[in-house]
Length: 307
Image (cartoon, rainbow, N blue to C red; front, side, top):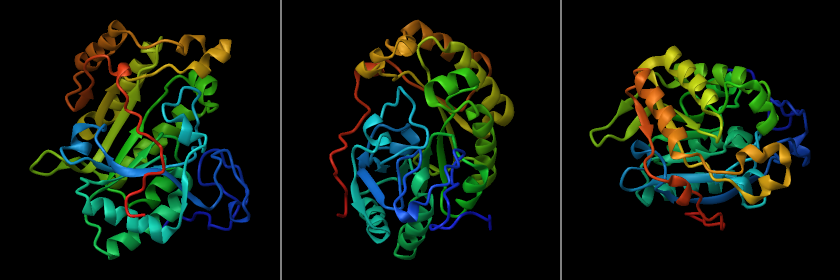
C-alpha cells in the first residue's frame, strides 16, 4: 500500500502540498479542512452516455477544489460557497440511497480533497451492499500515488485533461505544472483500472474517460491534448471532447481573461472534432448543437439523497 499522510498530518494529498493541519481546522488551497461538505447528491443525466445511461449517474458533488480554474463551470462549489456538512457514515448512506434510486454508478465529483474519507465511506458502503461501479470524476491534477491508493475502491476514472500548454495552465488555473502532473496521473489511472469494460447495455463498468473542454481560442492546446492522450494510450481510453464552455460575467472583471469572455464557435469545435477523427480516434464522445445554451450545471441546493 502507498505511504500517504494520515488525517492528522500536514496535508500533501495533492500537488499543491499546502502542508496545512486540516484536522485542526486549517484550510488549504482547496478551501477544505477535514469536514465533509456535499453540495448535491442526486441522479444526474448530463454525463457521457455510458455513465448516465437511462437511469442517471449517482452524482455526489463535493465542495472545494484544489485547482479552481478562473472559468470553472461549477464555480459555486469549487469556491466552497455551497454545501452541507455530513459525516463519513452519512456519506456511505448516501451511496446506498443513490443505488436504491436506480443510479447506474456512484459518481464522485471534485473528490480530491476528501479522498481518504471517501475511500473509507466506499468500503463501508460495499460492506453494506453497494455493488454498482464507482466513478472518480476529477480534474486530472492528482498525485499518482493517490490514484494508486484508489485501486479496489474506484472502477472508472472520468478525468479532465485540461492543458498541454503550461502558460495557459498557469494563467487560468495557477498550475503551470498541470501538463506534467496530468500525464503522471493518467498513467496511474490506466494502470489501476486496466482496459475498458462495458455491460450488455453499453454502460461502462471499468475504464478511463479523458475529458477535454475546448476553450475559446485554444484549438492548438486541444489538438496537443488529443495528440498526447491518443498517441500514448490509443483505444485503451475514451476521449470526450466538450464544447459546452460557458463564459461567465465574472471574467470580464479581469482584462487578462478577455479571450475567455465568449463561447466556443461552431467552426472552432468542428475543426478540433475533424482533427480528432483524422488522428484515427475511434473511442470518443463528441457533443452536438450549441450546448453552451443548455445548462449542464445542476442546482447546488443542498439536495442529498438519503439525508
